[in-house]
Image (cartoon, rainbow over the protein chains, first blue to last red):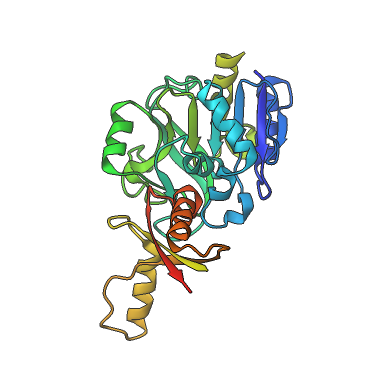
Length: 229
Length: 80
């Protein structure tokens, strides 16, 4: 699997993502600066977390208009897998590769800690390494992770099985208690219609080594490698 | 010509920041404060003298960048 990691001014999880991808594939991914208009031939484009363009205007809004994102949108249309983590998820919604928007956390606080998630869809190249309904722990670190979409869009996402991950409480249930940021229907990650684009607020790249405090992110990268190699 | 763009959250979209501001106003003793909604104002200098052209251009800017129409409404005001 050949991968590229997009780097914006203000990205700060690009290296973590690169290390996780290299661990999984054995090859370092190409790091692609936001001003580039061409991408190397790759199977996966990863848009990392951070504060692209200082979160000016809205999180992800400026990055979504950058030269490289125009190219990413073209590649996504051809079926190249695209992953957005945290700020990357915000960029993908702003670029309209994924529906909805990520708003200020309902509690208004920046949340940085491991959270419980339930894997809802295991039929994508990103999630096949998990078991349906599996409960995992992955760290989050965000201020704007409150997923919003209108009811019709939410119903469509649910109906089409495009909710990939949901925030859950200690009993593994998607309750208000387990909802760390006020997201509609506890949504933590979603897929596009063709299940080739995935955005999620939690950081699987921060849970790939025992030293991270958990390795629940490993199946995520293993899924991609198995699907795209 | 100058354009003032007002960007606000759509009706029905929760605004936790507006709510926090409302609570703060209440605790300051402004008991008559109802719902508070927060938004932003963007001022744009335009090299354009035709008002309708200016408004059309700014509306396109709103659709493309200044507002996220999934969650936000916008209003364009031309000044001067």
